[in-house]
Image (cartoon, rainbow, N blue to C red; front, side):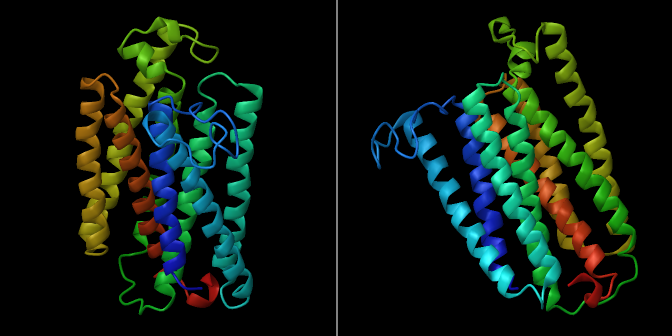
Length: 294
């Protein structure tokens, strides 16, 4: 399998994640109350919240088509690239899971906060395609010096798991309105999952505490890579994203969860998740035989 189609799909999924965050932040989910049409039209007046929700739908359709094409390619290359092919088939399962969860939320009208599960699965989908892209890209590359890279596997995996947990936790704080209740004292937003201001503050404080874990794990990867003199490009990118994320985190609290800051906060978290997967998978690829990986 080539790496260009999975890479393009990764980018498309990332854009879809941003669009989804905008839909939640702007409360644009019901701007198109019908489906597959939007307000009874194939192309509605593209303005305001309708534009945001319509772009989100178009991106969802595009990602679905790209993933189906990936599935066709994976089926054709299943013998020469069995591991990337299996991951591609798994991604189709995740796609149906995201669609099913979305339908359940709409039909059952679940309380705020349950949509964080959608975000978690969608980011797993993004991470899976980063994994596929990394495998396919390095399949045709000379692996070079292996020494020092094996140590990055455990560090990278630990960072990946902590960043993912924080990402889902942050999505829950936003979607359940716990952040708005804790910071803006909007008690009218109390709900089944966040029944009191004390619970809202607990979720918010937990999110802040886990931030220390994210910083610690990312710094572990960065300094371990520096000490082994490996993955210079990746660790610099991770350090840059970590620095920006910390600044945006302060901005998010200072702006009292303004939409632009929460969307940027989520986008940076997803990028950090992707970079951690990139480092982990590349370290694994470069310390194992290609035969066992593909």
